[in-house]
Every structure is written in structure tokens, then in C-alpha cells.
Amino acid sequence: MTEPARSLREAILTPAFVGLQTARTGLLLEPTLREIGRVREVQRGVVRVTGLPGARMGEEILFADGSRGMVLRLNPEDIGVALIEESAHLYAGIEVYRSGNLVDVPVGEGVLGRVVDATGVPLDNNGPIRATQRYPLERIAPPIMHRDPVQQPLQTGIKVIDAMFPIGRGQRELILGDRQTGKTAIAVDTILHQHDQGVLCIYCAIGQRSTAVARVIDTLRQHGAMSYTTVVVAGGDAPPGLQYITPYAATSMAEYLMEHGRDVLIVYDDLTRHARAYREISLLLRRPPAREAFPGDIFYIHSRLLERSTRLRKEHGGGSLTALPIVETEAQNLSAYIPTNLISISDGQIYLSPDLFQKGMLPAVEIGRSVSRVGGKTQLPAYRAVVGMLRLTYTQFEELEAFSRFGARLDETNRQILTRGRCIREVLKQDQFDTLPAADQILLLLALTQGLFDALPLARIPEAEQIVRRHARKHLPQIIEQIDRAQKLTPDQIALTTDALRQALQTLDQGPQDGLARRD
Image 1 (cartoon, rainbow, N blue to C red):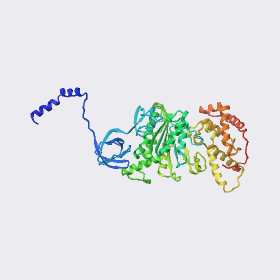
Image 2 (tube, rainbow, N blue to C red):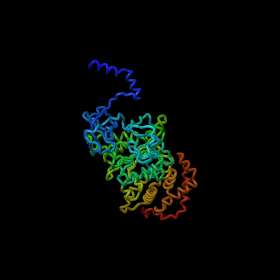
Image 3 (cartoon, rainbow, N blue to C red):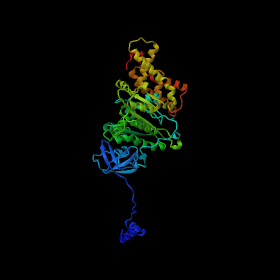
Image 4 (cartoon, rainbow, N blue to C red):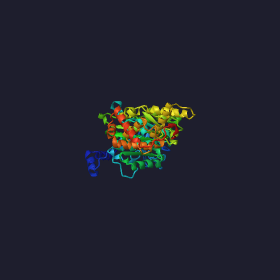
């Protein structure tokens, strides 16, 4: 370097010159390193990128055309990025940048009442989301020492579920069955029933048709449920990467509310489509397929999702997150890969039978294949006092009914079992959007188990149910209050209540005494 050039360089690097330039521009320029890569290959929903050696799993990647992606695979020669935004302008050679941040989502009370996608972009034309914080999609599940036992019930308002397969706040109860058997209807009814229960709700739609999601949103708005509900949507035409991250984004929104002491219910509708989206991404990223062509870590992606549902101890927030994952079966095959995975992860399952659905027995819950492994500990004491052997009685009825179709002669005991079983089946029927409070359910079940409906024609049982409900609200307010306070019913109270309901039902014209002469 010549002497004049060296003198000029020394003059430029003096502190006085640097300070003068900073004062003139008002900016302090500091050099930073930024990794810039290039797209190597573009496939449907998946991009291979080179030149980003510092990229991390789950990091947000920015493309020069404005679209975004998330790192899902790290290779020595390139990285695999799943697109979370649809783009028609990506091509090999376009520049790619690291954001330095994991993909996150807005959280807080501001998301309630809104319809958003997995990245927090509003879809309801109601302005931007007013978020207090942002949570990453992937968060570590609460450790065991931060969790509290599941002790408080989550009422669904559906008689067959609350009586036989109760759900507790913090539980994971799987809903599965063939398509068009009423899985979403049960989940939506459960959301609608939380209007006075103090439970916030998140409905997560994964890969659903836009018309189906629009119907659910319209139902929630008509019944005033959107004020305490958030809808997170990834439509069936969305990129598979967006469908993959949607349940994690919805769970992060729910976790913020849980950590601030709120009880939250989240519905994943459904995880079958979520698994298919992840399978598509994995096969494009050239991960080896295993059973039914799903990648080997498909169990892990669902277990780490559902493990985040729990009930926290008071010193760690005291809230709860209850999960209702939905899974679609094919030809009633419960032993398929994804259903068996989720059955083993969850705390019970509610199975919906297409045979019952076709017969009009709605909700089409098959009692023999459904179970709740936790909720029985949270069930109101009054339920346990009146339900008793209801499930066993109904199971015996189903077996005896199948046997009686062969024309076998039955003794009086078996005839009574058939009569009581048909009454149970009729009482457990329930229309959609017609959820019942716990006290109404218990009094109806009390009348059922005490045989007050046995002498009635099946066609008049719905009328008898209305009489029981009206009479109880008018003449048994103390019993209803006691049930709502989660107090036990004494044998004397049960006897007095039964007598009162029997007198109320005397206003009905009784039909034939022979239960075998009646048909559903």
C-alpha cells in the first residue's frame, strides 16, 4: 500500500471521523453476518436449500419472493424446508435467508373469538390480532412435578358420555369412528356446552373442506360460542407444511391460557389428516417409510402433541388443557396404525359406530368399545349414585337382544332386561345442539334406573323426559342445587326424589305393559 493510501485509511478509521459520520447520519452502522442460501430443488410443499449451514430444526426460513418455510430436515449437503405459505414463484436458484427465530404464533386473550391460521394470520376480516406475546410452536410438555391429578369434571352435556365415559379437565379423550358418524358433532356440542362452565375452547381444523369449517364457525356464532372460542384453520388445499404445524400452533395458544389459570378445551379435527400431511412431507424429504408407508416417528409427533395436555398445580398456573383428538377409521378398523397409536397415547376413547348411526341411534356411541380411563375419578358423586350398573345392564341387553332375534322363548327376568334395555337406549338418544346440564341428566337417569319409564311406550319417552325436567326445576330446586355443588345424594333423598318423579309421570297415559310388543 502506498504512503498516501495508508494515510487516508488511517484518517478514515480515527474515532473522530467515525463519530462525525455517525452524527451526520444519525445511525450507528454495525456489520452483521447473514447466511444467504439458494433453492436447490422445489417439490410440492417441500424445498431443498443449500448454503445455510447454521440452520436449526424448526427455524423459520425466508424466501426472496416473500414466502416462508420451516426447517424439517438437516443433511450435510442441504436442508429440507416445508413451506408454510403457498407460493407459485419459487424456482431453483432463488435466494433464501435465515430468520434466526423458530416459527411462532401470537398468544393471549386477543385470539379469543378469532379465526386464524397456524402462523397467526387472521382469516375473519376483523383486523389484526392483538397478541401480548408469541410462543414457539414446539414447547416442552410440563414436567410431572408441575402436574396435578385430574379431579374436576368437564361436562359435555351429552348423556351417554357424561354418565358412562366421563371426561376430566386435563384429560385426553379420543373420538374415533368412520367418516360421517358424528365425530365433529360431539366435539361441537361439547364446545357449545361450555358457555357457562368457565372453559375456553380452541377448535383446530386440519385438512378439512372449507365448507365444513364454515358450517362449524357459523354454528358457533349462532349459539354465541365464538366469544370464548378460537378457530385455527388449515384447509385441505393448504400446503402440507401448514397442515402439519396447525395443531402445534393451536396448542401453544391454549398453553398460554392454561399457564394463566384458565381451563381450556382443544379439539383436533382431525389427526388422521395431520398424519397424512406429515407422511407426504416425510416421503418428499426421502425419509424411509414404515408401516402403512408412515414414517417411523409418526408416533412421536402425536405423543409430543398430546403430552402437552394436562392439569397444572396452583403454583405453576393452576389451569388445565383438555384434548379431544378426532381420528377417522376405515371400515371400522380400530387396529390400523394411526388409531392404535392414538388409543395408546390418550386416556380413553369414544367410538362411534356406523351401524348405530344408520339405525338413527344418535349419538352413535358404541358402549362396548368406548372407555374413559381417568374421568371416572372426576365424575360428580350424584352420577355414581344413580348410574350404578347402567353400563352392565345395557351390555347384557345388547347380547340378549341379539339372542332373542332367533325366536327363543324368554323367561320373565330376560323380558325385564329387554324392556329396561330398550328404555336405556331411548333415553340415551339425544339431538345435536340439545345438551343437558348435569342435574337434568342425573334426574333422568334416576328415573330410568328406578324403572319409571319401563311401562311407557318408547314413543312417549321423550315426552316423559320433558315432564321430569320441568317437574324437577319447579319442585326439586334443593336437589338440583345439591347436585350442582358436587354433593352426594343420600338414599333417603333418592327415594323421595323417585316418588316425586313417579307422581309427575302419572299424568301420562301408560301404554302396554309387555315390553316385547314395542319396537324402536
